[in-house]
Image (cartoon, rainbow, N blue to C red; front, side):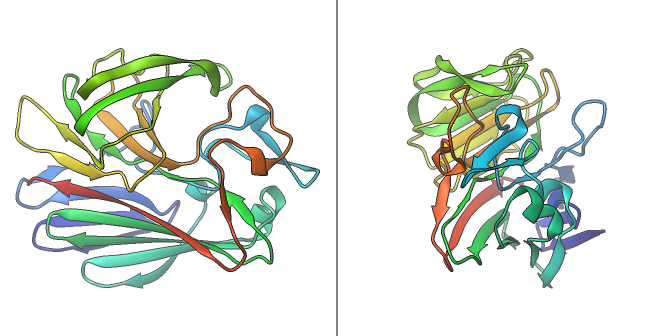
Length: 285
């Protein structure tokens, strides 16, 4: 089922399955900003990544001496969520542990995602609640895909010097070497080949925002990354969308770790506490 919220500028739809954004429609511009999904290209639109981001070595991890299996990007994106609350321009959904999650992730949790429209902006806030008596380890990420064209640009607020992780295309793992991406520059141009080696995975970003813009029209998406330590930028090569992905976590490297608590980018949430992050997209029309 799809639930909608709206104001005078935007109408936003979210599916219960995966708590996935399915539409961000501008009433004034008569324009759909969100990629509408195409199974022949990429079936997703805006999956939520929890409790891992990316892929584990052999899709497995060890925690306290026990081995578990976990699919790429975790299980939250392929589960039914519950609508928690809904008003005119605001709604929230919740996912909690069940038998299927406990079999692959032995923690009790609530994951609450709130969607809120204010003016021409969409705020998406993620809250993780640790319901255990001990520390809970997790990663969390967003993956919204926005319509665009080859030649469009992603522009940081400030000049950045960044390198991207190099990816093993067979195992989807990070390799030891990195590749230069920006050298005291602000702009990444989307070309048909830029994602041939998989996503750009960037960290150490100084800017607060990245803006999707075009030389062919004046529609923009100004994206507040929420202070994420990692940013993924990805699309299927040559496809008419781009995913801007704030990550609190990252896919495994080829270096094996003995315990999930040692995973690169992992978050340690104390018992009874909660973790929150929000991304905000401001649409020009």
